[in-house]
Image (tube, rainbow, N blue to C red):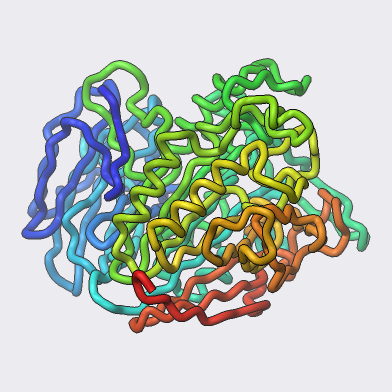
Length: 542
């Protein structure tokens, strides 16, 4: 059976749906398992004994105007249970899917037909077949409003990279605590949710003479090749108190990039790295994709009886509707890309075009942008548009350091920008991370070699918990005419061993007013506003 994500963040399959009260639909299942019929409980059953708290916490994700995913991980074969409440009433207990070691004890329920613009509280626990229950944990989220109302989105990327993990003496992953302090309605993690290819050491001596001390697990000390090692990498950030507290209060829209598998991988690549026993990128990516979907709160439906592992094969791109003023378009720039070597400007003209999205995703993006009625259309990418990678022989993004006509991957981006102009699609912005600094770039045809597009903004922010990098302003690829309106990063260009600190970690915020005015802010990890700009929306067709 084929699983596809549609534009409303649902997956099409043949599982039944259960309605809770008047508004709520629950969808759940487990791959290859014999699952008892789903149902509702009027009240919680008595428990035999309590197990310890859920060590990975609870999360919500993919919260739209009418749907949400609730995720957690149990400690033994058991069923996910959720008690829902809204406005102090409408209490219902939802029986989720059974889970076991085949899913590393992870489980989720996908709630649909929720009321828009409403706050929900939930208690989450697991229950064994004989009635034993884990201690319940609390979760809150709010659906997006369909009417003109304010909302706040934060975004960043790059968690626990370059060997920097959880140092509890330094407070742990504190940028998550800072983001939580803003009380955003949604967090977009724009990729590199883990660093499967970058092992951690127990201690690192810093230039100031102090020592960084990583909290270690077996799975973060080696490059991740097996499914279990990749799962362990995803479990690792969930050990942090700030991360768990953040996830319990702020829903996540998760994206993936390269480090969920291996640095700068592409389909069909044979990895040239002696640390790996398995060199086939496609094999590692299949495992990485599964582990990512098991551990991120994405609306993956597990099949009751089917072959395979019950996970989406390759289509991870989707639209996340956030009401009258905002649609998020989350792209997958990893699964469909052409080989990185084919993008070298010296040979690109003689080779087939090697885009990042693939023809189907490119067509979907343009079609979805055209059909969107939201005031603002935010295209969320795991790679920037004009910041090049450091290795010219391994050009991982659109930029190729050749500021002339579009070559390599750039024709794909040129077609998208031209289509946005041709169809009169207004108020398109681009959000990304990946390059470990924060910046605001304004693109205008007057500055560009390729000119068939309307002006637009690209906003970059990250990392949330990794080494900071920096790019000199004159290193941007000028094909599409980026102007550096603001940029801030680590001054020591090219350093990969700078420890995370609140002043060198970054995230961004979209602050939407009920009027449609969009204020973009770029923060450091300590919560200081580094740059901000209020953007008035253009009228449709104007």
